[in-house]
Length: 432
Image 1 (cartoon, rainbow, N blue to C red):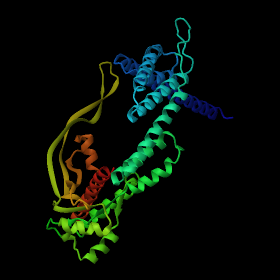
Image 2: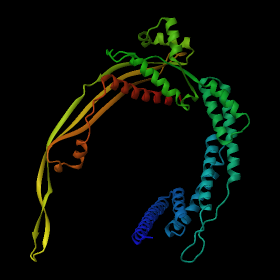
Image 3: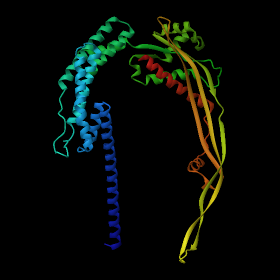
């Protein structure tokens, strides 16, 4: 093999080995940094009396480096007090028979299992000074937690049946939630699954969302009220958690009934008409909203002019030093540039209010205001003079291509979408 080729291959192998060693050093350094932070966090948690967190942080550090002394000390110091605190809490709660106490006992036992598992799964912890193992003794709480889960499941099951027997939408919903807690503890507990489905159906609230009435006086943005109400419905229906106890009536069904009743969207601002519509739709509640303001500013560009100046190397020159040797030196000078930074801003805003009316009682159950905003901002720069005088930020802005702001209609639609997201979340929170 050619000697030159062999030397090149050896050099390549050497560079690869160096790269691997550097990478390994970086990884090890990162691990050392992480375990050091965890050990310090464990010490701090112990000193503040947060024994659970001290055990967690110390265990995580010891998984990386089992012989880290400060982490070993934090673990052994914190583990017994942590266990004792939870066991004391369980003894105090055992004298109570309410559901909250039963739930808390399960939580305490689950934390005990977590802490004991963390310690049990650690590698041997050897004290460097006396070579003795330091790992605390652990205990299995499986029997206790299974019994506690059974007790809590039974209590929630009985509570669910009691609430369901009271009747009514809210009681059915609460009964379904109790059955769900039962299933969380024991998925196959008696007939809790079928009862949950029954109670959930009985607890579903039907809400009709009427297309929002545009009272802003702006008619050049299309059917903005329908856009808002449709997006609200779509965003709520796409969240399965929100529809557990909520059903929204479709706009198709609503428009059919509105046509039969000869109701226009403007008439639905009147509560009497809204209630009449809700009754025909079989709704429990009806949401009526109005848009009172639509603002779409004209795009505005603000320009700022400034002088940039920087001392840079403009050339090099050769010279002879005192010994007559040839040398090269850099010649520096100030360079300048005239910089213009431009910022284009274009905004839009929609504001209004809504109210939710109980069909049966004709009372307002919720009223609120809303706003939706759309913001567009773009910055770029132009300059004349010497580019070397520019800062890094200005150089970056100078490479930006000038953008055009979205049209007024686009911005209003974006504001409507943001508004719909906000209102959808309010409705989801309300329904839960």
